Image: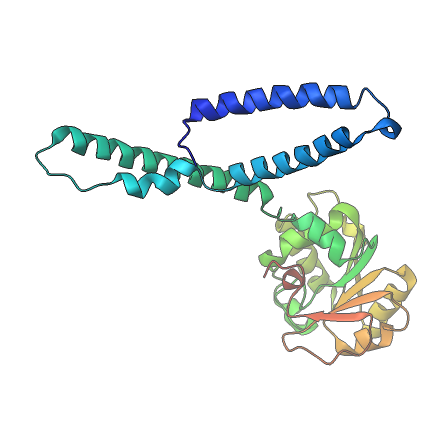
Length: 273
């Protein structure tokens, strides 16, 4: 194959394009029913030409494949030849660098778009619109109501997910407490963590009861799409009444029902842990 320069190839393509434009305009000026053998032959030739041109531009450029043959060893005393070889090498490096940058742009363009946390939350919750969630062992560091008599500590790792849920879900938080002081500590901890500042959750949607059965009653009355709890007994009791449940447990429990999921933490369920 002759060694054409880039300008020669451009001119050749332009002439070929003009010829194709002329022939195509003539071809489509007649009806398909009147196609003769010459027109059919032209269509076949056009298809072959398109495939050939596509393969030509898809393959690495010709001058890069032939470049190694141009690097002929020459005496070091020949300054002109050395300079010429250096230019060829530099040209090859530049071309390779441009190809690499172009490939990087293409890779970035076709790279899968990472979903946002909001999209993940919506997908995981199956577009549920109402969620009830226990505080102890899920939102709070404390694991039993007795610990709330001393302090209430919000798990900051769960805050981002919690606030994202409030953007499109009607969220209710609930917990069993042993006294009024525990209730005040929980509200203050949530307030200090900024849970009420987003506008999606208000204090009236933080519910307290004195027994575990009271929390079960809250959930059944609210009829949420999802209930999140760390008590396996509550999860088991509600499995028949709630569409979906998420059991928060450090040890993966046996799946008691098809509508019950489990995770070590709320944030890990949404891929944030």
